[in-house]
Length: 114
Length: 111
Image (cartoon, rainbow over all chains, first blue to last red):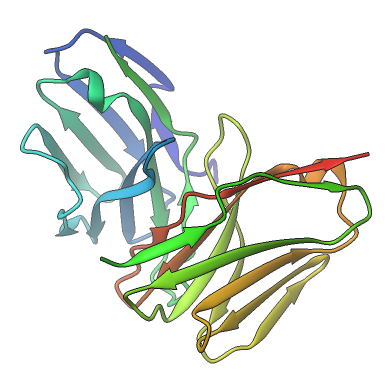
């Protein structure tokens, strides 16, 4: 398996623009997580899905953020409109519900909003 | 709020020594703690998991402990090597599977 695949790896956009980050989880994993990492705050959980259903989105900072998982092999995180403070590395991770909670992370998308 | 706290200061040690990293948790009781390694520009990679009813876990040169009284986990790398240089993240979790991460501790092993 290729692991968790995220795209794009880097995104530079202007303030006010819409940004869409994409994630393909590992086949067979039934949990998918979106995290954001910054130097100041570390890794923060934004939202997670179980069997394509959003379970907890309490970490989503504002209504400008939305996430979808239309099927078991694809998820998106959208920011509209983007702001400079959204600049961070966004990670997608997936896990298998075997009770260990072991998460497999993608390479991340480095987002810069100017 | 639930917190996982790690020493923010970088740890510098000499090759061959044992590195010990600390993770403390507050305001909750995780059912398990996990340790991840993160290299620059990469996503975190899982290393070890220890459950609340386990005192100690080992994997090759790695050892992790879980002290529910102190609310602390210690992560040891014995016979450290320059290739062990990375940031190490501690994460706590419960049955909901979502992990709560600390900010990580940077380890530098010099020859």
